[in-house]
Length: 278
Ligand SMILES: [Zn+2]
Ligand SMILES: [Zn+2]
Image (cartoon, rainbow, N blue to C red; front, side):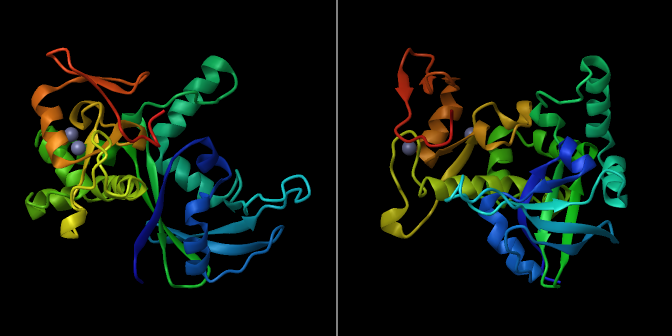
């Protein structure tokens, strides 16, 4: 079974109780992999593999008012329901998120998690398979995430970033294997951003590799990863190696509200390119 991660999903209340939506960007690949054709309003049973066991679920193409939303794309969801073995299994594996939700429920009465710190998130990796109707999910619970990132913290920020965005493969195989899940997750996020910026530096706007046919560009963590463990796109900036080097040499403060770097010598620099930092 060829295994390729299609996307990652941060675990939330919906994953633990009823199911989750497929982001638009990945719908086509996932549906093709499953060998399904689903018109709006249709659903089909699928099987989800988790930890070597099979769980029944349903892939649904949500029906909505097409006259009201004529240009709306399909809304695909994987559903299993609150009392299903799938939901029970997720609540067991992601007991950390489940306990946070339960605690929140007790304190606020609504059970909604308003904000979950990045280092507390748990993830599902959704793989494509070539077996019709079968989906493979890999769980990345918080304990595992923490264990893996602990190995990275010891490396220091620049080396950790190089490993996470796939520009530095010099780490030992032992370490690479130990941080496999986190690394795969990070690489996917970094690659998406690099492509979105056309391999250009957000500070100088240059595609430095272009004349050479090279896509060399770095992903920089604004709040240093080894401290924040925050690998969300909202904490990542795409930089050419020169500017990346300068940032780590001078450690300027990034002001998110104005999206400017403030250097120790008083120099202030804004971003030439920005499509994802709000
Ligand atoms: Zn640059
Ligand atoms: Zn960096």
